[in-house]
Structures are given as structure tokens and as C-alpha cells.
Amino acid sequence: MLNIEGLTSHYGRIQALHGVEAEVREGELVALVGSNGAGKTTLLKCLSGLQPVSSGRITFEGRDITGLAADKRVRLGIAQVPEGRQVFGPLSVADNIRLGAYSRRDKAAIADDMERMYGLFPALKERATLAAASLSGGQQQMLAIARALMSRPRLLLLDEPSMGLSPLLVAEVFAILKQLLTEKTTVFLVEQNATAALKIADRAYVLETGQVALQGAAAALLEDERVKTAYLGI
Image: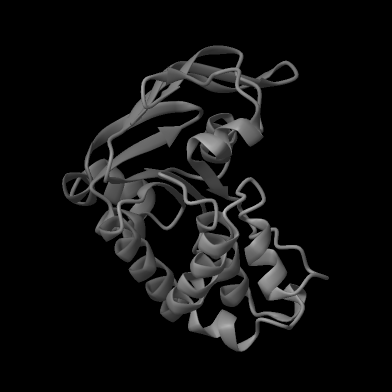
């Protein structure tokens, strides 16, 4: 579904990505783990069109999208849940969710999808009329995911969904991710909580200083001594 070939990206003179090669197959949950500053968020922003690519190529379902604008990528079926949630605080929960469907015109289906989001995230339905800023961190994370799902993405890019959440909420968010896979949404998950990510992923990449250092089946990487030492605290 997604192919990343020799991707490089810069912030001014600073090179953040160094020839990244990766792929995501349809129906998979692929994890990207690594320490702070490894380039994980930069890679996701390149995929969603928010960060310029210096060289290399990104293809989505066989189409070269390397230079495609971010809004056009959403219309193709790519949606990103940004790091730090970034909900629209003054707007209601319902309006935040509805904004995720800004590129759609099928009003009846949008209304159906709103109800589906409330089914996935019951806490949001209870707070639908409240300002998004009034939600807890975990509820805001759920809201950010619901907003992204409203575009009906075929590929969901998730950036650090467990950041700042309690272990109980992390388990709840990751359970929802597993449910999405049964609904034919492919997931590319960036996560610093390597243990949680590798436990639910099919495959994984380890990013170090802007380069892929390790890759393989998530279960195998979970047992890899290098991963245990560097990222799992074992």
C-alpha cells in the first residue's frame, strides 16, 4: 500500500532523515519505534505532506505522492493523528469530529460515521456539546483519532498516541487500534512506548538518527537483545 524509497528530509541545513526505506502492506499495523529525535515524527509528516522531502520517493497504492499537497493526500485516503492531539480547543467535541470529514460531501454517510465514532468512543458522545479543551488527555487522544477516522482513511498515521496517558488509557487506545484493523484500516504507528507498540504490531522498524537500524516481524524484534537493551529497558 505504502512504499518509502531512499527518503531524505532537511530542516534548513540539518538533515533529519537519511535514505529511509520502508513499506506498509494493506491490512497491517506497522510500528515505527525509536528514541526522541530519531526522526519518527519527521517521517510521518513527510508521508502526510506536512514536511518537504529532499530526495527519495513515496508511493501510495502505486501512485507517486512525493510532491502531492497534504489535502490531496487526505482525499486519496491518508489521515494523520498528530503528536500532542492538537484538537480545536474552543470548538465542541462534535464539531471537532465533524471537521475530520471536511473533504466529504455525503451528508447522510457523515452523520452515520459520527454515530460510529460515538460507538467507538462512548466518552465522546457523553461530552459531545462540551468544548474539546475541557476533555482529559485521554479523551482528547480519542477525539483526535475519531476526527482522523471521519475522512474514512485507508491508511491511518498515528504519532505517539500513548504520550502522557495512564497505562489503563494506553491499553484502551491500543485496543481500539486493533479493532480498526478488523475494519480494513491499515495503520502506521509511531510510538516511543516500544513494548506496547511491538505487542500489537505485525511488523516494525527501528529508527535511529534518521535511518532504519532494524526491521522485521514485531514479535521477533520484541525478543531482539538490541531492542531490549535500547528501547525496552531490559
